[in-house]
Amino acid sequence: MSEIKRKTVSQLLKEAPGSEVLAKGWVRTKRGNKHVAFIALNDGSSVNNIQVVCDTQNFSEELLKDITTGACIAVKGNLVESLGKGQSVEIQATEIEIYGKADPEQYPLQKKGHSMEFLREIAHLRPRTNTFGCVLRIRHAMAFAIHNYFNSKGFCYLHTPLITASDCEGAGAMFQVTTMDLNNIPKNEEGGVDFTQDFFGRQTSLTVSGQLEGELGAMALGSIYTFGPTFRAENSNTPRHLAEFWMVEPEVAFNDITDNMDLAEDFIKYLVKYALDNCMDDLKFLNDMFDKELIERLRGVIDTEFVRLTYTEGVKILEASGEKFEYPVGWGIDLQSEHERYLVEKHFKKPVILTDYPKDIKAFYMKQNEDGKTVRAMDVLFPKIGEIIGGSEREESLEKLEARIAELDMDTRNLWWYLDTRRFGTAPHSGFGLGFERLLLFVTGMANIRDVIPFPRTPKSAEF
Ligand code: 4AD
Ligand code: MG
Image 1 (cartoon, rainbow, N blue to C red):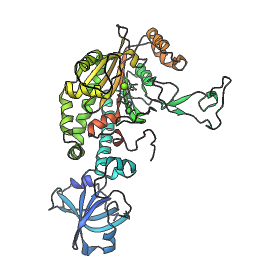
Image 2: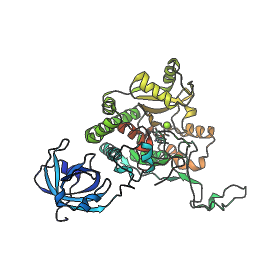
Image 3: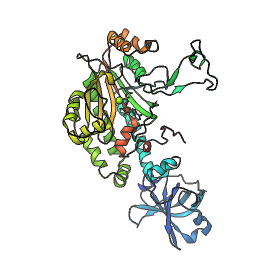
Image 4: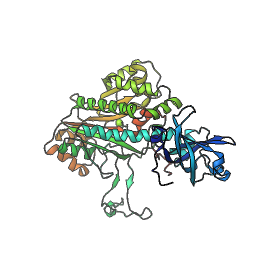
């Protein structure tokens, strides 16, 4: 068969009939009768299948018997106009080779709809479903669009380390990295762990954010972004938390909080528009199968201006709402997803950027406001998701930053290099982190963050 070059299903579906073609892929379904068999073939290039028509006379009964859901085949034949509904062309098969059979007694992805929970248990096979094909193609498109966006704006993609000795967010939810023998941990004179004997000669962890190193980049290159995996060991079993997730973190010298908000809003709108312009087949499938308002919601975001208001004003609205929240609201609390979603979904009915949070619930590096109580933080809140972006203007004053670090009782020994940016040529600067999977929840309409990453890592779960 190899005398013709294989074309993808996506390519073939766009082609005019009339030529001899070669297609390869996995069988989604086979139906038919004594005379003719119809195979729906998918190779992951599109949510759409190509129909393969086999005149049963031309193939052995044995071969046809092995063409079952999940089997992998190569098909040579003529691309002809299709008389059936739903496709313009189909392949009239002349030759079929079976690469790999899939025993119908054992292959778990049979035709019937499966629950998302069941599919998580077979995450090694779920990319073969329509739903996960759509989600993973959109995930790819969004990653590509992120690089496109920043590249077109002159940002430099900075690769920040995954192994670190500092805790950016100060939440203490870090995975330790060690090569020490856990059954025989070296101790120091005080009886604590002797990390000087560990691989790096100090205590290290997986990063929770690339920001601190991102700031070093911005203070030299002007505009940078990071895009990579980050890790949080918080024991949050929610539909919006992963222990390993991807974060996009732009950091820009000379940007103040307003510039930062403008960038965040423009960036998200670009990504959503990119999905609408480039992933319509996949979005239509997800819209029809899961969430009838998905496409409308995506269009809505591009066309609306995000609301911008302070945390203090937001809390006032929540207090006046008369709504019964599971966690009571009051100035100073860390807003819960139910509060964020009230503001976005019920009160304003559009995305909201909340700013100027109490300093005690935010990280040490945020620029302190004159009131002594709040910092120039910004969270972007989205319908169905809650927080999708967290960011801030950074404290550029060495004095104020050192005072805050002392107040929080943090160890400056690990941060001397960070403080050097404030010591030498400091400048106003701002940045934010977009949770890539939170973005994908919004764009795909999926309800659980475990279903927008190929192999989710969550508490008590690291299979595959
Ligand atoms: O708000 P966070 O913690 O901010 C930072 O880490 C800053 N250093 C970012 C910066 O300013 N450069 O996290 C940023 C975003 C959140 O808004 C959320 O979208 C996502 O990361 N996120 C998570 N996504 C999935 N699972 C988790 N456990 C997440 N924690 C945060
Ligand atoms: Mg946050």
